[in-house]
Length: 234
Picture (cartoon, rainbow, N blue to C red):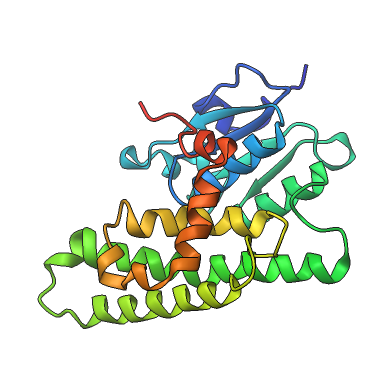
């Protein structure tokens, strides 16, 4: 049995199955990327719900896992060379798990880098822009009298949806016929934009029928449906 006692986070979230990959997360657009991929891959793992409303990411134990204090993060007891590996940043985790399992990331070098560019597109553009729109439309920012910040993120979110709409012309998935970690990275954010953030009308989501059809295809996948609920909220 693997011994993970050297990792302080295991004092905060004691593992019941230390031989399994340990997932520290919450069902947010970033968190569900990893749980969806784990469900798609069928890898054994143990999820730990990290409650950000209770500042559980800012404890010394969690910060020893991710000094940036964000979910998701993992400990793989069977990392490279058979040694435990700690990893944070959802994009890095997606790449690691896809390469570990040999699925959802092309092995052809050109296709691999093309997939990675769309993962980074989500990390650099879709996540930050959609998240700011959510703040200014749904959360504390909606009380600001000056609507210029909100309108800036509305315009940028529309532009990014237009980029996706163009990419999906003649394609079922971001990379064409094959579903990849690029789709997994983006799905939760688009779902959140029109669902939890209630910004569908604001961004004119009906003007992006290819994105809507792609989202529907993704959400119909059983592994996606399961992953969206992991770790289960209390």
